[in-house]
Image 1 (tube, rainbow, N blue to C red):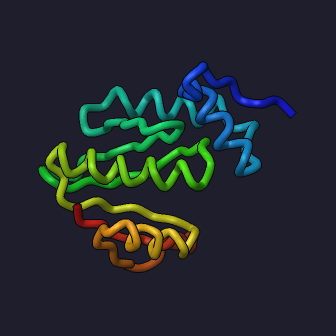
Image 2 (spheres, rainbow, N blue to C red):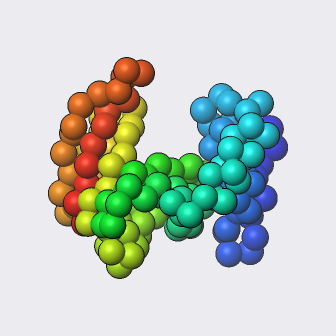
Length: 136
Protein backbone atom coordinates (compact mmCIF):
# COMPACT_ATOMS: atom_id res chain seq x y z
CA UNK A 1 0.00 0.00 0.00
CA UNK A 2 1.28 3.47 -0.87
CA UNK A 3 1.20 6.09 1.84
CA UNK A 4 0.34 9.68 1.02
CA UNK A 5 3.25 12.12 1.11
CA UNK A 6 3.32 14.62 3.97
CA UNK A 7 5.71 17.53 4.33
CA UNK A 8 7.63 17.96 7.63
CA UNK A 9 4.64 19.77 9.17
CA UNK A 10 2.31 16.87 8.29
CA UNK A 11 0.54 18.66 5.45
CA UNK A 12 -0.28 16.68 2.34
CA UNK A 13 -0.54 18.15 -1.15
CA UNK A 14 -4.05 18.83 -2.44
CA UNK A 15 -3.64 15.98 -4.93
CA UNK A 16 -2.61 13.59 -2.16
CA UNK A 17 -5.59 14.63 -0.03
CA UNK A 18 -7.93 13.84 -2.92
CA UNK A 19 -6.16 10.54 -3.65
CA UNK A 20 -6.23 9.43 -0.01
CA UNK A 21 -9.88 10.35 0.44
CA UNK A 22 -10.85 8.43 -2.69
CA UNK A 23 -8.76 5.44 -1.59
CA UNK A 24 -10.53 5.37 1.77
CA UNK A 25 -13.85 5.16 -0.07
CA UNK A 26 -12.69 2.50 -2.55
CA UNK A 27 -12.71 4.97 -5.43
CA UNK A 28 -8.97 5.30 -6.12
CA UNK A 29 -9.57 4.80 -9.85
CA UNK A 30 -11.67 8.00 -9.96
CA UNK A 31 -8.81 10.39 -9.15
CA UNK A 32 -8.42 11.91 -12.63
CA UNK A 33 -12.16 12.46 -13.03
CA UNK A 34 -12.69 13.89 -9.53
CA UNK A 35 -9.61 16.11 -9.58
CA UNK A 36 -10.53 17.48 -13.03
CA UNK A 37 -14.08 18.23 -11.84
CA UNK A 38 -12.80 20.06 -8.76
CA UNK A 39 -10.35 22.05 -10.85
CA UNK A 40 -13.17 23.03 -13.23
CA UNK A 41 -15.50 24.09 -10.40
CA UNK A 42 -12.87 26.28 -8.77
CA UNK A 43 -12.61 28.35 -11.95
CA UNK A 44 -16.17 29.56 -11.32
CA UNK A 45 -16.60 32.64 -9.09
CA UNK A 46 -19.33 31.03 -6.96
CA UNK A 47 -17.01 28.26 -5.77
CA UNK A 48 -14.32 28.48 -3.09
CA UNK A 49 -12.04 26.09 -1.29
CA UNK A 50 -10.80 26.35 2.28
CA UNK A 51 -8.15 24.10 3.69
CA UNK A 52 -7.78 23.16 7.31
CA UNK A 53 -5.08 20.57 8.00
CA UNK A 54 -5.48 17.74 5.50
CA UNK A 55 -9.14 18.46 4.88
CA UNK A 56 -10.46 20.44 1.91
CA UNK A 57 -13.77 22.25 2.35
CA UNK A 58 -15.58 23.25 -0.83
CA UNK A 59 -18.05 26.11 -0.77
CA UNK A 60 -20.71 26.83 -3.37
CA UNK A 61 -22.09 30.31 -2.71
CA UNK A 62 -25.89 30.35 -2.90
CA UNK A 63 -26.33 34.01 -1.97
CA UNK A 64 -24.86 36.53 0.43
CA UNK A 65 -24.40 34.78 3.77
CA UNK A 66 -25.51 31.33 2.58
CA UNK A 67 -23.64 28.46 0.98
CA UNK A 68 -23.53 24.75 0.33
CA UNK A 69 -20.43 22.94 1.51
CA UNK A 70 -18.71 19.61 1.22
CA UNK A 71 -15.38 18.15 2.14
CA UNK A 72 -12.63 15.86 1.02
CA UNK A 73 -10.77 14.51 4.01
CA UNK A 74 -7.47 12.69 4.47
CA UNK A 75 -6.96 13.36 8.18
CA UNK A 76 -7.56 11.22 11.24
CA UNK A 77 -11.07 11.45 12.76
CA UNK A 78 -9.69 13.50 15.67
CA UNK A 79 -7.95 15.99 13.37
CA UNK A 80 -10.94 16.13 11.04
CA UNK A 81 -13.12 17.32 13.93
CA UNK A 82 -10.58 20.04 14.74
CA UNK A 83 -10.53 20.94 11.04
CA UNK A 84 -14.34 21.14 10.89
CA UNK A 85 -14.41 23.49 13.87
CA UNK A 86 -11.84 25.70 12.11
CA UNK A 87 -13.93 25.60 8.93
CA UNK A 88 -17.08 26.73 10.71
CA UNK A 89 -15.15 29.57 12.35
CA UNK A 90 -13.78 30.59 8.93
CA UNK A 91 -17.31 30.48 7.46
CA UNK A 92 -18.47 32.88 10.14
CA UNK A 93 -15.52 35.24 9.58
CA UNK A 94 -16.22 35.19 5.83
CA UNK A 95 -19.77 36.39 6.47
CA UNK A 96 -21.70 33.16 6.04
CA UNK A 97 -24.59 32.70 8.43
CA UNK A 98 -26.02 29.48 7.02
CA UNK A 99 -24.43 26.45 5.38
CA UNK A 100 -26.09 23.45 3.75
CA UNK A 101 -24.35 20.08 3.80
CA UNK A 102 -25.07 16.40 3.39
CA UNK A 103 -23.68 13.23 4.91
CA UNK A 104 -24.18 9.51 4.92
CA UNK A 105 -23.08 9.39 8.57
CA UNK A 106 -25.86 10.22 11.06
CA UNK A 107 -23.28 10.66 13.85
CA UNK A 108 -21.95 13.77 12.09
CA UNK A 109 -25.06 15.75 13.06
CA UNK A 110 -24.52 15.06 16.78
CA UNK A 111 -20.78 15.77 16.46
CA UNK A 112 -21.54 19.20 14.97
CA UNK A 113 -24.02 19.85 17.79
CA UNK A 114 -21.36 18.96 20.37
CA UNK A 115 -19.11 21.59 18.76
CA UNK A 116 -21.72 24.14 19.83
CA UNK A 117 -22.91 24.81 16.28
CA UNK A 118 -26.66 24.87 15.69
CA UNK A 119 -27.51 22.16 13.16
CA UNK A 120 -30.74 20.58 11.96
CA UNK A 121 -31.65 17.84 9.56
CA UNK A 122 -33.70 18.97 6.58
CA UNK A 123 -34.50 15.63 4.95
CA UNK A 124 -32.88 13.04 2.75
CA UNK A 125 -31.73 13.11 -0.85
CA UNK A 126 -32.87 10.51 -3.39
CA UNK A 127 -29.58 8.68 -2.81
CA UNK A 128 -30.28 8.47 0.95
CA UNK A 129 -27.87 11.19 2.07
CA UNK A 130 -28.92 13.20 5.14
CA UNK A 131 -29.33 16.88 4.29
CA UNK A 132 -28.61 19.36 7.08
CA UNK A 133 -28.20 23.07 7.76
CA UNK A 134 -25.74 24.71 10.13
CA UNK A 135 -25.99 28.25 11.41
CA UNK A 136 -22.74 29.91 12.35
